[in-house]
Image (cartoon, rainbow, N blue to C red; front, side, top):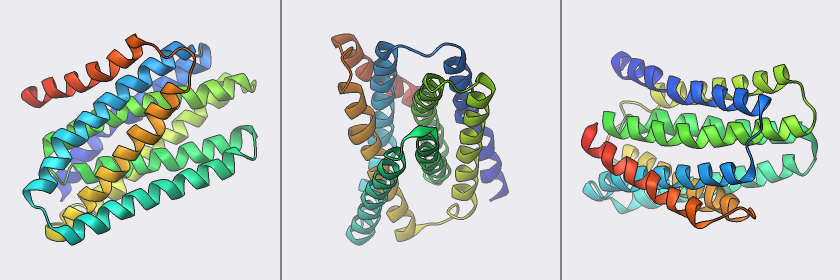
Length: 237
């Protein structure tokens, strides 16, 4: 358990640092819409490949219908609840609602990172890298929104640091409460992670990406570039 947790704490530093870097970049120079859309497509490709290559094979290999249905349904239900929660806070206007919604999102990402290492080291590393890219986009988006509201650079950077801490906390919880679980419970957790990550790709990253006016063939290609990179990582990790 201690070795497993140490591994998680080591690799979770990647998304933690990436989140902070994204906030610092956006605090000084907010990325344009084309950059945002490109990053979203790339992140979607990486996450989609990570799910298909690492998590789905694990479910198929140890397929049990009841844990699959329960875990998958719970994942969908949670993500829909988070969406409702986020819309409620964002609808109130101001940066507070946006930051709260982002905080919930990054905490769940951290939890998924912690869970993924129970599938295996390679799965954990690839899922961590995939979510680090997604968190880069999230940090850029939050920081850019705060900058447009006229928030100070120090306030923006501090906000992204807090978000990165939530990622770390989520990973620790996933690495302590859920690590070492086997059998049907583990399969249900994997099914939960699959549903949550698929929702992230289809209902958040790609929906946001295609809503912009700067969406282009190049940004679409980046989806497949992200997918291809994960395929290459499969042979290297």
